[in-house]
Length: 583
Image 1 (cartoon, rainbow, N blue to C red):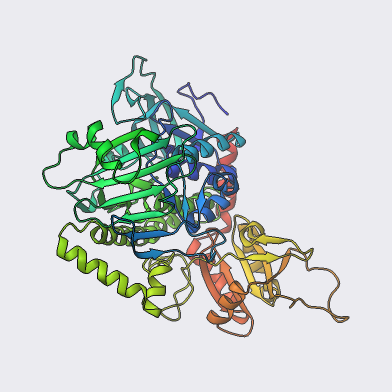
Image 2: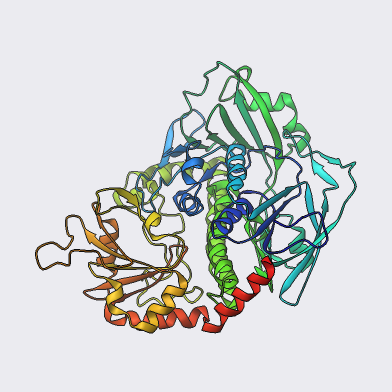
């Protein structure tokens, strides 16, 4: 890669400002696609605070697409029940979900320093991705289809992982100017890029501060057997969250009550008194104690020409559903394939407008349910809290509502709002277009069980139920789909492959054939099927563009071409641009 300390540095495909989970995931997804990426992280070293603690099956599917899920999951706790309890530990209600609709456990608890360190280290596999720590973006402008930006040595940075204190650098600024085709603001809730763009946010700030206390068991100690699960401790005197984490780590969060100040709550004596309600403080080291407030905000704009917001720069989510980091990871998945398609001449630049229109409503839904959960667990009025406890106990023993609560039916599904997504319109209210495709384990011809996405790859895919999608396409449609790098698959029910003397003895060229033992995806096809030979057009982010009968497949592919804004000349023009850039 070209010398980055020179003002004549390369024109990067993408510059990402921010190396948190959103920026790191996006760097992996773009690096895997072969794009040239520069990541600027203002903190000189990773300061190791455990901020996020939870993620879900959707996000592990994204990390699977990024090629890092197995390594990341090694350090996670999975299938941990989440509970609502009284202060003495008596159970009010419980949430767990053991289904693996998207190929991974629904509940993952992690230790963020481990996760971020893994994500950072694994980027070394991509020579086309460069990470510069201790560099902050200070200015940018847009003209002539590029973003010109300047970064310098960070002049004020965090230097202690136990608090938010900062230090002034004694190094010279050493400004560097370079260019990129796109700039991604993954620089957090206080995004300087968002501020420079003048983008406002909708939503509200909440006045109720909370104290977060991160603990680490001392060597040789075992003191958490009585708290094996995630607990919302519904105590009207002091609403509390108890969160297990991998290794020897544990987190408590305590809501500040009227009259309690930040200074009082962060005092070591106060911290000791609070955690001693639940654990022996002498068996732990306090890694961090910090009072914080939370916001429920969404940016009004997610794209200004060639600059796009992602993660906390685009939305700030209360922590009560554990969806802040997860929403940023979803942003990265949605954005990565679209940037790749535009940069490689597979789609018109207007495709990037669908990033904000798709992600806005889902991110907002996660914020709204997080606010409701906050209101539910932080009731401080004794009478209201008692009524809440009785209500949740009653609902949990009812057959239908109880099952809905225990399996997390209140969590927004990965479904884009009608009229906001890239794909065919839903034929009915619960149509599958604009929803995420299930990911089962499928069985190959040689009898290997493989996660579906590992066979579909990173591009578009056509999946036919008991049929070969290629047989229903003309030459023009096939040429277009080949340009997109489309994968073709035939899915059969278990033991339902074609067999007998009349069957062709070799697999058709370019076709993957699999069968499914569990029947999740086969049932999905049959339930949503518009005909006897259904074919699904799957986007690179595994959302459904269309599900049609094979007879309507040509028309659906024509709609895909139109919505992508693809023209044959685009491929030639973008190839020439990329050759000039890399020369």
